[in-house]
Length: 265
Image: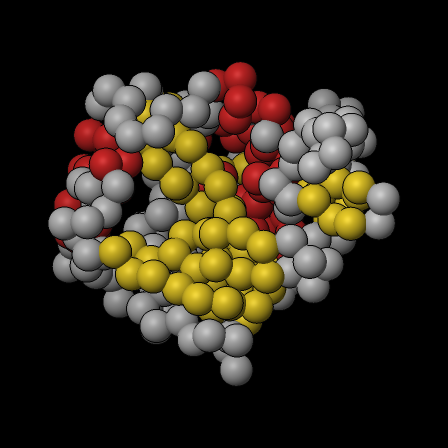
């Protein structure tokens, strides 16, 4: 991500420049990444939702509050903005449209950029495929999925969260945040022909999709997809951090989750 901080506010776009947010990015993923770099506080989302390409499976407030230390408030003096045409986002002290800075690409766009854009549109408008996850379940699990919130079961961290422990006793709600980075235990790359149906349209354009099994310092383990613009192969015992990215489109909505990003050694 590229950022500019000046007297007009805090601005960000992707490494591909202002015309594209990357193969699994958009204005909300850029906004979350920007907010995570700034000191926490409250922000007014203003008309930001109208700048998104697709409806989200959970609300903008839930996405931001689950994945950052920021809260959403109509009374806040900080405002979140999205450019109407370009993939630029900003946090400023005014509700007025900001004076947007110019960004240049740090990375070349892929040859399949337009095909990926078209495939996302097709995927969102298509019927549900694969393992269907209900809207209610997405909302209930948002804090654990997006914020790495774990439960404390008598000193043992439990993630993903569950209602009962191995003895059948109820576990308290998730309040502990797992720390980053996590360590890669193993990884898998699925060919375009072997990708799950949710990703079968984009997998050929990405030359397959990769997943990593990681261990957190607190003990829990989990499987995450690698970010779609990760071109390096993972290494066992390597480190990853996590970013909110698009996962898949379904039933007219875009679903978001954490994807792994390789840490530079």
